[in-house]
Image (cartoon, rainbow, N blue to C red; front, top):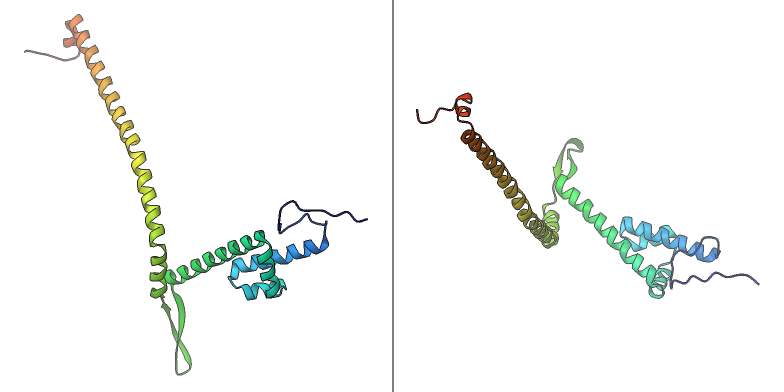
Length: 187
């Protein structure tokens, strides 16, 4: 009788290697699909690269919550990557060749202002939240910084005051002290 290994996690994507060749094969195909999906955001292309039929993918997604969650995570990563690429193009532009009578005569850099504005609109709220958090953190840090600066100033003044008191006491105890230190008062 063959020994079977039951995975305690429902719908686990990667069972222990070597315990079930079919499960290992399925997990490898799922990993390949998810990795390609995270790069391309294309379900169809990712399925083709992984060698999985679209129907099988959707069956797995319906039956396996872990795979469904990994699918969503890969899609999110893919869209984030796409967004970064679009942002790069919007910022640096894309070189376009100029032809005149069939001959290449130069290049220009085109900027996609429409995409740049859309990305700004999409992230306006996120940026505002980050700025608000940074401002809040700065406000929280400021009182401590200001208090610390005030304490330093008070300590400097206190040391100066005590030094002045010691000097006056020394002058009171030793009348010649004024003349030795070049202080002439009342003359």
